[in-house]
Image 1 (tube, each protein chain N blue to C red):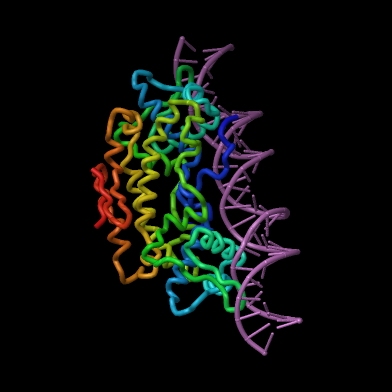
Image 2: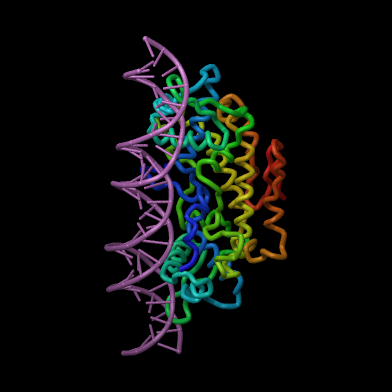
Length: 169
Length: 169
DNA sequence: TTGAATCCCGACTCGAGCGGTCGTATACTT
DNA sequence: AAGTATACGACCGCTCGAGTCGGGATTCAA
């Protein structure tokens, strides 16, 4: 196939392909509001991704009420929510489950070393930060990407070394 | 609660254990400035983590000049930089390599579908956000964690749904 | 000088989970 | 009834993270 030549490129906060596909599919559906329902096969072909896999992903999105499924001929999936109301966070959450930065985590010290857990507290806060950013990105932002500056503005960050100003709006 | 028993709770933006261990070790060293050098074995025992694995991690941190290694008896590792100057980002980078949210990424369109890549642009920006947050967290913040509010203030976020204000002191 | 402690580093194993497939059941349209 | 599509569980190979092993180099102490 393609890619898979560089195993060392990503790490840590990589989206799973499933989440990727899910976001792509939602974007695609949002871009075609005139079509009553888009089949998993159609979407998969548009992006050259395996259709059966995409189908499973869309099924999960259907289960949590992000999309609606229509069986039968000319069936497929349609958005159930306004693209402006679908956050990347909920999509990823629906597909991959809860996301935590820390490895051991059950909010009662099961990584019984009090010491080791202290380092994770600030990281848990980083985790919240990331979640918040993802909650502020919506499918509509993906669709408008290009001319719109919404996303760009959303996550603008002043990161002059040592400086600590995060801002967005 | 919902974290339950499942070991597979985390995903996506999980720190690798190596990065975790690296941060923990640096914190530990920073907490013991009076000791000229701490061996990988000592640190590993303090946290109950495999010492050989930790050794490899510290070696990578030594290679990029974050710590200094001392061979021989009573040898070990000591910080080479001020804890206030060591960011979580560079530690993670040194251990795990570059981090990208997107799966296919080589800055020249190798995921040749122009369509599929458009969705990744905004995500790349999320990636920058996360990097910036990690760059603003330092080993010293981990050490002071508890009484100090530095980290807490650093990543405070107003996330009232729909609202888009990130701020940090 | 010898030995112990320690760093150094590549090679290796092992297992979980991700990405993907298959097959079958079910639902809807015409 | 036929054809198209979703629904869903079972399965599977393979990558990669986690951890181990072993041999070698360096330093210190007795």
